[in-house]
Image (cartoon, rainbow, N blue to C red; front, side, top):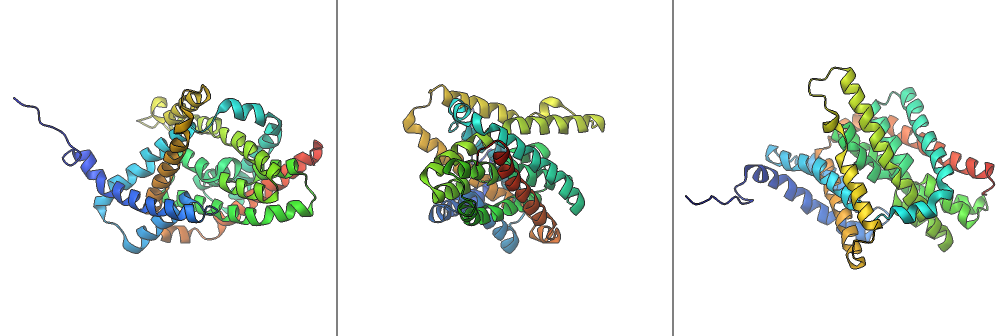
Length: 341
């Protein structure tokens, strides 16, 4: 008896996912190209915006659903793991310790203001967490990291990323102007930008538009801040596990809810830190991680219901504005208290 070969074309799971995945990859390629043309916006934002546009203008039918769902979950986790290969924990720890006090204060302020203001505005818990995490840590990447843990609706994820992007653009234009008006030093502005602007690309853009020294310092601070997504993900995972256990969920399992992709992220980062990745491969790994994020966020956009997003009204945007303002002011206040300005 001869064995029957299994190919991508005949394997039922792969075959069912292929249409949605191919659609997400095709749109992601366009988003990646647009992101290269307009780096201030970036490929991930273009991906989610194009995904939303295709979803709501052309409404892909049910055969695309399995692949889109796979892209928004598994590919999302792969992208976070791939990011680990580009992050040296040793370098970030060594150069970022002096910014840690400001970062921890702004992180606390972000979550407290998201909880209080979100409650006052009537924004539901999962959207509050997404906007709070995105503002506190690293914008769309942080939102992408916690999405598999708290499992929000796709339109909530899309709304949170879009809200974060809006204030990224405002920050790039506003921060350098305010920095000069406040007569901030290069290091003072770098610390402010690195702790108060959400996305890495926007931190880099604002920092280097102020000065080369400010840009270098802001980038290091931002990388330190980005590593805090690891304990935040673990805390959220245990909180979700505790809630499921308390509610008596029949399928409760700590092993199932634990964010294993974060553990693999640490493994990837340890490999990078140990110097086991050839330097020539690092740019390719960075590009791979970026493209996987674009594919994942495109898939999330393809799942987003624009009507439900519009129905949410202005409250999530007001929440994003309030949390971002609180973080920006607290960063300057802490620097003033410790004599860094």
